[in-house]
Length: 249
Image 1 (tube, rainbow, N blue to C red):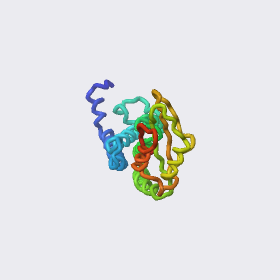
Image 2 (image 1 turned 90 degrees about the vertical axis):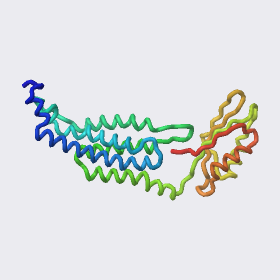
Image 3 (image 1 turned 90 degrees about the horizontal axis):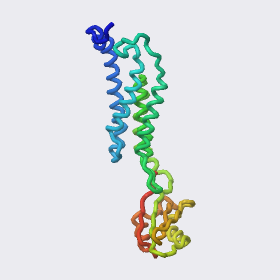
Image 4 (image 1 turned 120 degrees about the vertical axis):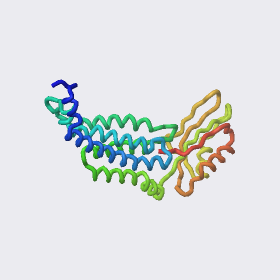
């Protein structure tokens, strides 16, 4: 049969073909809504990956999964023998592609690493789309709700649990100045911090010693504010410039 004939082209708009398209459309719509739900939490907190990113990831994952369930309608049903489809291979490709997208939102600057939670939640959004694509709608809804709760409620729980915050400090001393590590450690302890073991690195630039280290609060309630640490560093002998920032993970 000529694939360009009116009869062949009409098969793309036959009743069964349109019914399959409607089902696929409803799957995509549901995946989009669930992706927007998860993405709203990220958007609310001002993250780069927001509702649109999550909605597209979830919907695309569903699209790549749901079409594999209708091989008899591929190419208007013109395939002589419907191909054997292994959904796990499709999922494998989705996970690999999402891995590159997740890596793009992870940023490491000094002792601070940001974007890990966003990358993990993007991966979860792809899993939600896969569940919608294969028809596990209840599981997809539950995963979307749990993902949103994990990123919002669990954060509040983390704030209540005992923890030790860290502050990344970079100090540039005056030219030919010889800083004393023991004095710096003593001053840090006086302000409720201690220099974490193995984090102190020293470099020289044009005769200026530069120290980079991570200061960890000795107690969650006794650690000085970042602004207080900055004031302390400004009065430390020999300091020419410095940078103080929370060590985020």
